[in-house]
Length: 512
Ligand code: HEM
Image (cartoon, rainbow, N blue to C red; front, top):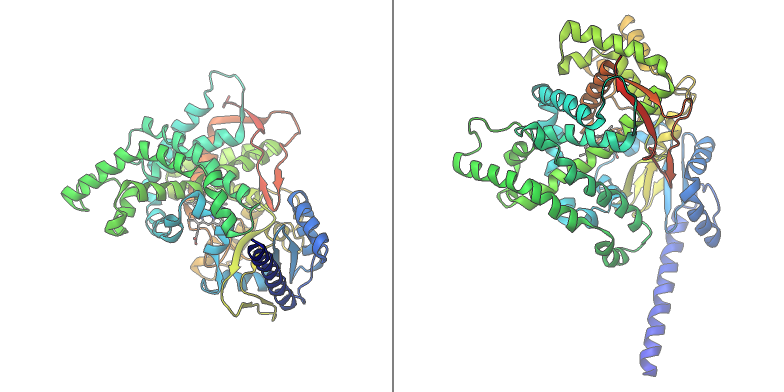
């Protein structure tokens, strides 16, 4: 018994010594990277706690000190390296995946292995579908998107006559976005009433995908996450619910493909068909296909409904933008009708949404990556991050930087429309990419709501189409005002993340 105790004690001591040695070796490698906050062990643990509620101030302080450099801040269990300035952001944006991994960085935030299942985290063919078929089909599928927007606004807002009705904006917009996104994703062939049911799938999934990762981030080591992950995550329940609704549709589609091949007349032009075009035989089953549809829902719905909620808050705070946008939509629709191409002519709507995204970035940090190459990652200024380091870009401070945007902290809804017009007047568009420079879909080292570089959001073309069509529909058909005059619902800050307030309300009525 004594021997066993001795062995246990010896094992624990050896473990602590080894961990301390590894930490000392690691710390020596990053000694040249400045710390914003404390460097001592206990003080930096305290900083890690404080970070949960004071992240934006800490990150802004770091950005003010090192606007073109790298600094580090203490998380509860590790350092986070923060990159600022165009040169270093470009380094991250262009780094090869086997050196600086997007997938591993996302895993830390999303905990996909627990919230979605290991298989989904490893086989990511659904991303190719977003990049290729979804984007290519936006023109063809626009009538469905438009149809769903009309019906979803009608159903969800439930307005009569000239009465004003108050709604909580985020859940209301989430219900609309969920329907519109899924009309294109899977329910293209469905009767409109069926798309209402999609909300039954996506609403529990949203909490599985967003609440569970936050809770899991309190557990540092992967073995702790393996133990607590299955207890915290409700993925099995929400997956089962989704399969109950999507299962019959997928089975019917698989049976048709089996019988008639991939080119049968009337084959729906939707996400499910696009996936079936490229998947391996072992993926042609209800579970893997359902998981992919849920994963796309996760990427698409929270982001887009948050963006629209923030844009509505900007609109109610700045009602002077309503009339010019309404006039623009009326003019464009009279000239071109409702189409994806017509949306391209809605320059003010585009600019308004782009400006709203600039000021309401979903967190102080973005583009999180993990260094996975053994030799670490060397930035162009010579700084080296060792293997295992997590690194992010200071997105929000970049968007609020006076040297990049005039009156950076002021909402200027038509800022980008003016810049676009100025460039056009000066014939400054040098190549085909330049045309998009000031548009919502365009990313840059100083415009990061969709990230930039290799992993820039592939769904942004769809998101821009959907959000512009929704905003155009809203300004044309509804009046909106704040719940309380002059009060914008406060965002919720949790660590580096920033959420639109789910209880924030606005008043809607049919346009008078
Ligand atoms: C306003 C709405 C949206 C915002 C703000 C947004 C933002 C982002 C951001 C910041 C990233 C990570 C970029 C990086 O780390 O470098 C990302 C990735 C991604 N987004 Fe979006 N997104 C939106 C809508 C969508 C939609 C509608 C879809 C799908 C239809 C989508 C699919 C994806 C996917 C699949 C990735 C991962 C890309 C990869 O693995 O390389 N997103 N998005």
